[in-house]
Image (cartoon, rainbow, N blue to C red):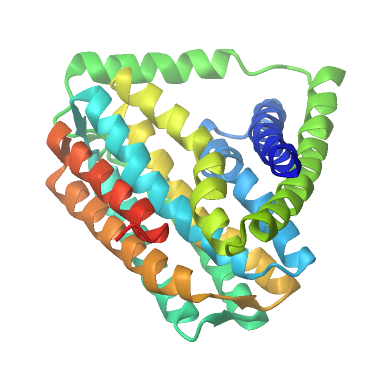
Amino acid sequence: MEIIFWVLIFIASLALLVKSADWFVESAEKIGLAFKMSPFIIGVTIVAIGTSFPEAAVSIFAALRGATEMVVAIALGSGVTNILLVIGLSAIVAGRLAVKRSLIDLDAPLLAATTVLFIFIMWDREIVFAEGILLLLAFIIYVLYAVLHKREEEETPEAIEVLPSRKERREKEAKIETLKEKVPAKINFKTFIFLILGMGGLIIGAHYNIESVLKLSELFKISTSLIAITAVALGTSLPDLVVSVLAAAKKKYEIALGNIFGSNVFLILTVVGIPALISPLRVDDLTFTIGLPFLIVATLLFIISGISRRIHRWEGAMYLLIYILFIAKLCGLF
């Protein structure tokens, strides 16, 4: 009976985390538009960070609770899930994902550089305060570079699309104008209420999620890292899964793929960087020997697919197969 109770608490806390992040991001986006922030800046800051808020909240509470081995496990597990499961399903739903040139020029190299930096930092199986600072500085550089790169793209619009048609260009320009017209002149009281509710929900959800993970690991006599790298990572990646699969179904490939590039960079640099400022993070054997190799393989596959500018349905199926192998290996099935 106790196991059922804590399983329900785990599921409820994950649901609260996801919904609270949605409230927080939507409210913050409205506030950003009201203050005349550009849609792109909102995208690379509020929206990109917002989709990974559940992981960030859980990781911070894990560090405060002393369960530091969960932090890297969550980041690695979510990173692998984002690529193998989310992109895999997106490619299967869409039939084929067309990668934009802007993703090759900017996001793919930054994701590769971020992954290499992360491997270097965690190689001694501990991430300390100074390394957390380094990760956060890298994230600031990432955001600044993304903003500058976007400005260059605006000056050379031919680099935005892969073989763009006049119709596609007109549709994009119409969407931008529509978005500008919808910018609210004032922020109402309801916006701030949902902003506060979202933040409160993130705090409460993260607290009970960590407590349930610790209790379940004790009851099932398994490591907290195993639950973190599988169940927590999958649960907190649900927003990315929904956004990318729906975008792929509507043939909005840039959103489907760009969302994962940005989320994985954020996961590595801030979801790990911030908790490292609270307490030194340990990397256990499960995360290092299984999680890290799969993250490297998944990232390489994603970058190679990006270079080819096409992710076909059969590649999506391959991504899903590797994800199944990842879960099976973690659970000791082979």
